[in-house]
Image (cartoon, rainbow, N blue to C red; front, side, top):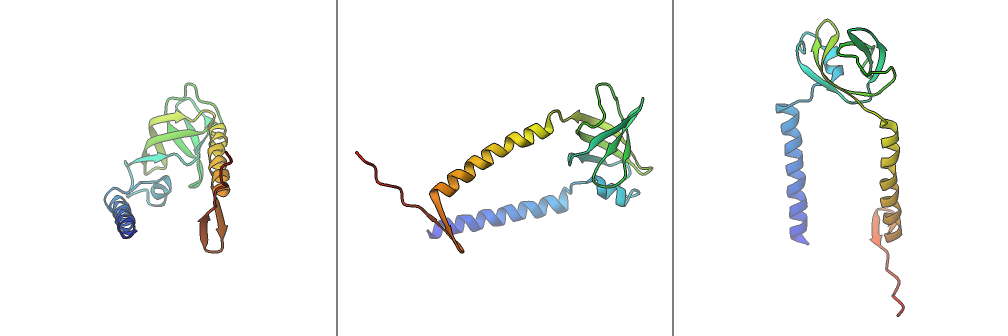
Amino acid sequence: MKNQWITIAFLTFLLFGLCVYGRYFHPWISLSDCLNDPEKYDGQVVSSFDEPVIGKIHADGFELIHKAGPPLYVYADTSGLKTGEFVALTARFHKEGHLTAIRAAVAYRRREKMAVSVIPVIFVGILFFRHFRIRVFQIELKESSPSRG
């Protein structure tokens, strides 16, 4: 039992150390960071996967509707794009307030995939509550019924 707690503590500290390392030595540049300080992030590559939607489509690009603020213009190849589709975007930010797409991939059937991914969560939840009894501040394993035969 003692070795188990040492292993858990070690893995927790290792995970914490990796998080700190990633935060300070390889920070993730978000679209909201770029919009808050355009001079600092001019020319930086930014990835936006948090449900950006294609807005109005133009000949040389499209408007990106995102959570970080007003729509942004993205210069990109618009062949095969439709208004209202979700897009995973990797682009270069420009201080003037627009993006130049490096890679844009339409996330087809994104909502359906999210709905299907709920099924395993429900299944695991059912198994959990069938095998464990939950009381205030404790979880205990239910006794299995003796087999007949």
